[in-house]
Length: 211
Image (tube, rainbow, N blue to C red; front, top):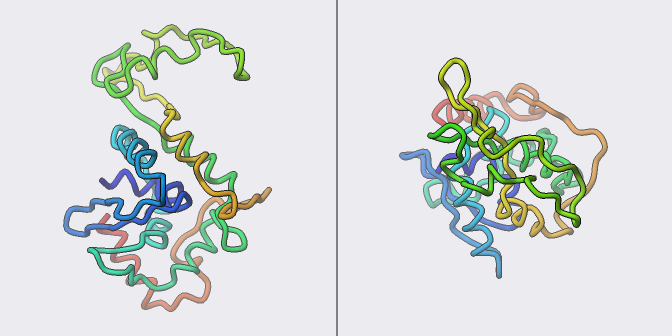
């Protein structure tokens, strides 16, 4: 499932190992950290229902993080260079703020029926309907049937939803693999990968064009 590509930093940070299958453009989890298999499987099930909103940046970083390609150890050159230029790393650790933004920015989904949620049901449409005293924030201003509204052009609006499984995945990231940073890089290109030979840049470009 190529949707995993946009969530690769979260999965990598929690300790999952991934294999990319070039023939089908699919990603599979091949190794789970101890005690985290069911948690990761639940998150991946939700990821299957999110929209594919990956960017070229997401794809490039994925190929620096993926452990195997076609069941062979990832042979892509310049992986450390990519990570250090991605804005996701500082001192060889994931930046906490970037991971927190990722779980929000990549959690878009749609519905096949207006006014209802085909994928997440009441978890999506009933959120915030009642005030939860243990959580900050206000009661939702929308009623359940106002989620996934039918737009004038005939399409159904998409919604963001950080599901409990995605939140659990984020919270399971070991503290020792993350750090904090107030300013991070927001975008990078192949040309910005300082010190990477032109031949390696072209090699990466050819891979990215297939995804």
